[in-house]
Length: 295
Length: 284
Image (cartoon, rainbow over the protein chains, first blue to last red):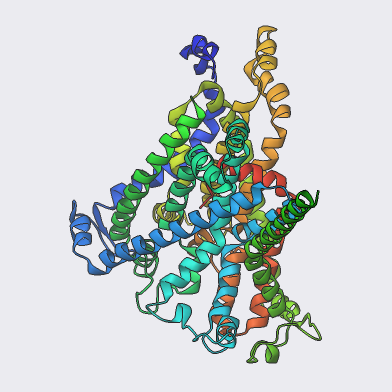
């Protein structure tokens, strides 16, 4: 943005508020109101059909000692770490591949991003059929190459790694696209200079590419972190939080409290805690974007 | 002479090897997606006996369309399709009406606080809107209609449209618009007759992404929809609970739900890639 924009000043900006008004009203109604109402609800005891009473911070105090909730936080972290590291690593590798020109590149890239565009419920159902321990195609493949079969999502130890695998399959393309956007904007000069100096491909990747696309890698990592924290559809359909509670993440816990047990006040408190965690992560992201956008 | 040709040959062989390696890398990257969707197709075209066979039958022969027929005969799939169309088109259309001017206003006024609200709205879990909205819709007695679902889908579509449009309007040249303002155009006229036509590619991107993420949304429907007001993803999910293991119809239903999105992606890949690279975050 140039200095001219600054000179035009603030009263100039004021002329544009009518453009924001209609969307502002809707955002107030379906986004801001729910945030505030959730905060208000979290200070109350409220079961659908039961009574409504102000109980101050009791819901939060109860959360701090609710083992089922605390375990869901631990599981969410476990899931998130794996579901960030794998897609980001693979996504960077995929971006360097798709950055090179080759025949049918745009078709290959489109096929590669299909998993992230497809309806999550639909793909989750098909994965569930593939995970079936007796009839699933995955165990057939494993046993026919001499590996032991797995219980996949049907076992409390393997369920989270299995869900991470599906999440990685689905969301590596998003990381790839963001990093590819970074690669596309790289200048050619440092590479030419390095090549003249006899640098190897790996040296150039390590010392030129990575530092230059680092902001994009950070943005991709933060987006992936937020998405992994709030993953729902895949887990809900494939394992439903089970077996037992072995894949019950915070989001699943929240769903059960609100819409299976109808503990609305308690669920609202979970939402607030969840919201704060995600907000902290996204503030990080917004500052990264802000630098890029309004410099 | 002989040494140079040997070196050339060696270099050529090196190039061939690296090309083969690169081809394998591309293949390794895209095969999980290809194999998955082929298996989905295979499940949907096989009869029940072949789907339950072990070792699995890979190629459906003869292929059958019975599963697709069953989807429409045994379920009210047509109603669910119309529900999805109404909700996704409605939520996308409304979001464009509201979000395109808002994106323009935010970009021109550099309203970074408004942009921050939109950003936060995009990263907040969908479930966190549902408790208050669920209670509100109950209180307003709006159960049994599609309006609650359409309204909650605005939570996804409005932020996507605003976010994509901010980026596009910021990238437009200011000169034309400023010249128009100097010549006595109102801001509205400058928006309507100069900025919007210039931003048309951005509007297409915003529309496609908003539509896809609304179409794919599951969580709002699963909480808010009644029997008659299910959207397609919710309807497909319910097929498993009622029919237990009946893989053929289930795969056929899953394929029908996601086919429009896959086709849209294949046809509009340039716009989608552009929008996702610029916008970054998915919805819901």
